[in-house]
Amino acid sequence: MDYELHHVSGFFGRRIDAQQVLQTLIDEGLSHTQLRVYPDTAALGGTVDATASDRTLRNILVDGAIGTAVGTGVGALAEAALVAANISLFVASPLLAPLLLLGWGAGLGATVGAVVGAEKKDRSLAALIEDAVQSGQFVLIARTHNAKETTIAQQVMHAALASRQTTQVV
Image 1 (tube, rainbow, N blue to C red):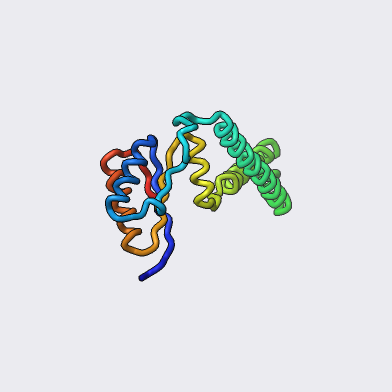
Image 2: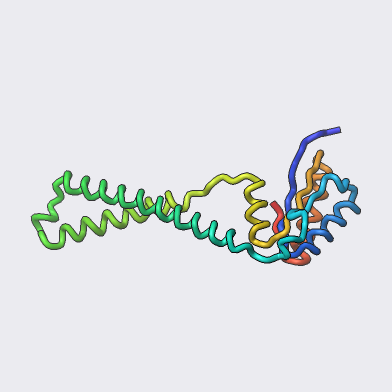
């Protein structure tokens, strides 16, 4: 028997949808011990936790601050490089040259800062589940041990997605 451990996950807006897909997977031959719905209890009741919103806002602010700092640094370096290159803008227009340098530096700095601040962060499955649960979603995880079980779990969750438009399969 081919033994490969995979995790097939589906994200649901309602607990009842997750439980229906769980029952379908059991009917298709997966063991109840291979399946789990998070959160385990209905304590959240599908409401969004205020601390989750605060954490998200804090993450956005931190990413923005990193992007701003990097952008400012790169913009300053770009301006210094243009001044060191002795660009003839200062001779042609001493009033407009500093403004052009500021604009070039700001544009370059904003581009680099945006890239750094919005850089994709690798996240684990546990972190994705935690974020989903904190935002009021329900996550069904199917631990499959071979290609057949993996295919069954994927097909059942994709079918749930097509019929309800309430899930995302990862």
